[in-house]
Image: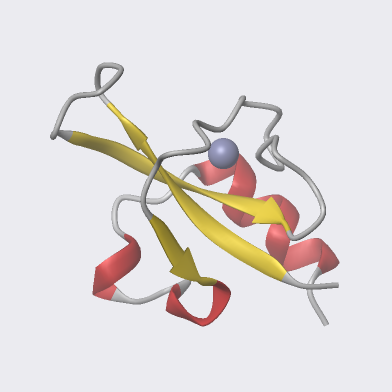
Length: 69
Ligand SMILES: [Zn+2]
């Protein structure tokens, strides 16, 4: 399974990052269930756990830990 990390902004179309979510490659909903903005910024899944992907959604992080190889 491939994943990507997608940004959630504090307000739609805004520049202030709220947090990052993990998204399965074939889905457009985050692992925590949040809808993802198709125009949002994306990071590769290997950015998980790095400075670049902070702050990270706690629910997505926990689910990803359980599911990732
Ligand atoms: Zn999430």
